[in-house]
Length: 134
Image 1 (cartoon, rainbow, N blue to C red):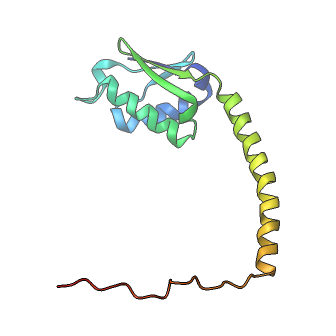
Image 2: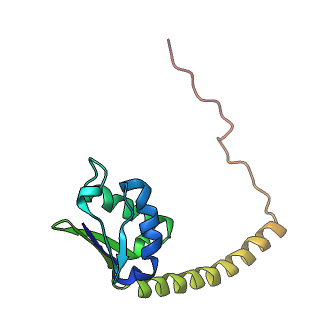
């Protein structure tokens, strides 16, 4: 079974160490891919299980949102999603705008708290509700 790392070549050794106790054998690293001998994998472990382990590894590394794990004929491929950099920039811009909008609202609430208005009770609010006949 091959695992093509794509842009995660630098984390190949960490992924191999993460997979070793789960699949029962240490994958061989080299050239931006991990090779696992099919005969040495624990009984019952399939490519679907390895895919789940890789996704868990990506979550721990906090890059799960940026990658997709594909299985094509027993070969796992980590594909970086396009537009992830653009999305991050958009999120940062939105956060900046939200902070700017929140500042004027804070000033307005401070003014309202400084000058509380007297509330008049509504007419009819104190009337008792008619009881139901039994």
